[in-house]
Amino acid sequence: MTSIQDQIRETAAQLLSKGKADLVIGFSQGTRAMRTTPCFVTEADGAKQLVWNSYCSNNLAVYLPKCFALDPRLREQEPPPKVAIIAKGCDGRSAVELIKEQQVPRENLIIIAAPCEGMLDSDLAQQLVGQNEILSAEESNGTITVTDDTGKETRIERKDLLVEACRFCKHRAAPVHDIAIGKLGQTDGPLAPDERFEEFVKKSAAERWEQFCSELSKCILCNACRSACPNCYCKVCFANQTRPDWTGSGRKLSDVISFHLGRMFHQAGRCVDCGACVRACPMGIDLRTFTYKLVVDAKELFGHVAGLDLEQSPVLRTFNADDSDNFITEPE
Ligand code: SF4
Ligand code: SF4
Ligand code: SF4
Image 1 (cartoon, rainbow, N blue to C red):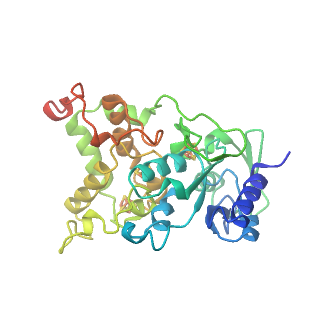
Image 2 (tube, rainbow, N blue to C red):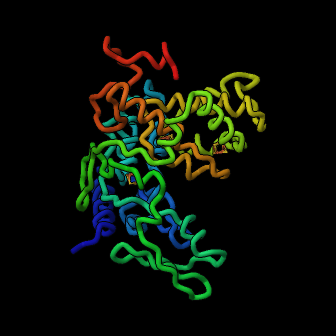
Image 3 (cartoon, rainbow, N blue to C red):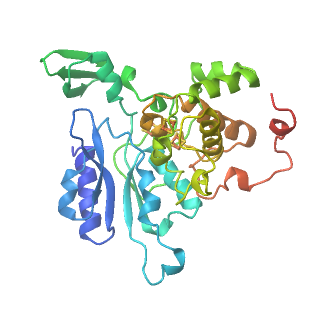
């Protein structure tokens, strides 16, 4: 049977050779073991670089707004390109949000859904292996056998290496797609809060605020979380739209907090819990607890789950007389 990776390569090559796509966005092998890197293929011959394995964790939808960053008024003279994206559940859901927010023309996007069983965390594998460099990793029957540069083999259960967001993901297949490769997983499922999150929501508002400030006090305002997030596509971020900037560029807590409050609230009803921001953070900050609170609130207060349906209005654009408003009138 043809492997998923071969099917992805064949599909990409066909789309490019038949002129159905100008660009295919996928993954190629990284320079180190257990790593991949985003890959932009424009010629059919280049499709053989594409890989599909357990290390394709980046959310590729982050590149879509840049592909279509043409002034809409110029589009008649210069039509936007036709772009195909290899999509896990999270890439696909982000693509849906970007289409709804007019950042991506649906007719110019080909979503190629690929199966995802949860991606693996190579940094975690390195921590378990120790200081020696990992040279290779083989996956078989739920076990990863990692070989380091001394030749030592370490066996790790797949479930113990899952990326944090993947451990709780209930949307492993792109819910909207044009081409499906392999057997796709679940497209929808109940939210699955984890213990750390449960601890957070049990706290009082004052304790949550303390946790927020304490965690974010590690932030160096490098903006890597913003760059990795498909939802942060503004040409000039709100934080930098004024002179002087809304937020300073140092580590003053008030600057850090105002940046993150603004960025996180902009994620309400839009965040797909892909974890790209968390993985990008060089300071190891637990951003997920806070963005996941918005995911849970959007679901519990408004029945809204981001990225599942092209017809669903953004949560902050709709109003229903029965909508909960006690988060405003009686905040806990
Ligand atoms: S968040 Fe879900 S869809 Fe995305 S890589 Fe993890 S398991 Fe796959
Ligand atoms: S805020 Fe983080 S988890 Fe949410 S969509 Fe953006 S990168 Fe993904
Ligand atoms: S990536 Fe981490 S350190 Fe950089 S701005 Fe975001 S939270 Fe702060």
